[in-house]
Each structure stands twice: as C-alpha cells, then as structure tokens.
Length: 225
Image 1 (spheres, rainbow, N blue to C red):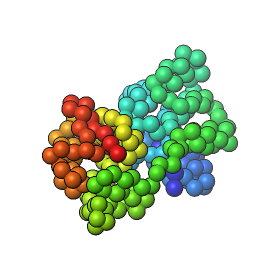
Image 2 (image 1 turned 90 degrees about the horizontal axis):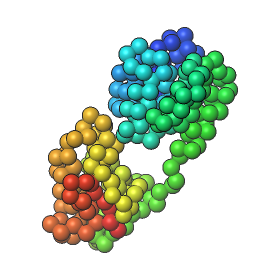
Image 3 (image 1 turned 135 degrees about the vertical axis):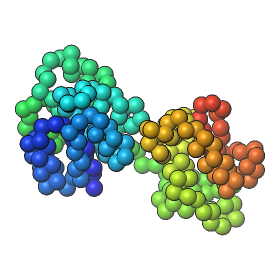
Image 4 (image 1 turned 180 degrees about the horizontal axis):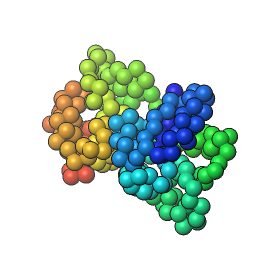
C-alpha cells in the first residue's frame, strides 16, 4: 500500500485529503507542523510527501529541504502562495511538483500518480553473485561458495541492499546511515565499521583483504562484483 505523508496545519483540509486518499487505497500519515512532519518522514518513511508552505513553526521549504537531504521520495508542495519566485524556490529546494490552493482533487491525485511513476526505481537484478557468496535479494537468502546458507541480520541485509542498488559505485557513509538507521544517525560511522566487519567475516573469503565489500577510507563503501 502506498504511504502518503501530508504536512499541513489546516485541519479541515487534512480530514478531506485523508478521506479521499484512504478511499483510493492510500495509507495516510498526517502532521500539522514542520517538526512533526520531519519526524514522521524519518521514522515512518513515506512513498510520497505533500507539504504546505505556511506551517506554524517553520516554512514548508525547510521541510522539503530537510527530507531531500537524505531521501529521493517524491514531494509535492500544496500551497496558497501563487508567486512565481516561491514556486521556483520550492522546486530548487527539492520539490517535484507545486499545486496551488484552491485545487481540484482529481488534478492532485493525477499529479500524485505521475510523481510516483517517475519515482519508481528500475527493477534490480534479484540475484547478486560474487566469487565467495551469492545473494538472493527477493528471498533475502545468502549462500557461500559451497551453497551453504549464511545467516545475516536484518541490518546487514539492509546495508547490502543499498549497495546492491548501486553495484560497483561508491555509496557514502552518510547515505548508508540515513537509509538504514535514519538521518539522526548520519555521523555514527562506527555503526558501519562494526556491521561491515561482520559482513566481511561472513561473506568474504579473506575478511582481512576484502574483494567485494570495499572500503573507500573516510568516504564510504562499494559492492565490487
């Protein structure tokens, strides 16, 4: 079920959107302040975010920029501000679309569908093979070179899945920490050291000289196949 987060302090509008979205099969989360919206996005990652600019604690642009700092989730600004510079600022901050109030529900729903289609990732190869291990991402099963199963923790799987979406490419520390633990942990690089040491012990033929789970010192990690 597609999860939509709505950040708006207009309670009647929130109720109307919640009812309309729920009737069309969306799971709806709501927040009436920027702080609550940022917390909801971090702890319950949505598939799409709708943000009003006129929030009681911060400008909605701060919500857009805050979420965009660690996530590529589609963001639609829904605002009564019609000025061109405001729209440009919202798009520059990371919004994918801008809808002005008042608006038609059918138009908003169509824009949501379009944003979700654009954000849909290409299908990744379900199986990742290296010389010393094989990962089936669809079933979350790992096997060694002899076909014996290798037990990985949910966190270890999540780290591997992030790397597997970008095989051979560097994934920075901050991105890994944001995607696996959330934005409040983006400086906790010791988490990565511990988990990658465990992953190498389980998956690499020689954990002290890893061939596949490669560290780029001070920057990040890559999955080299």
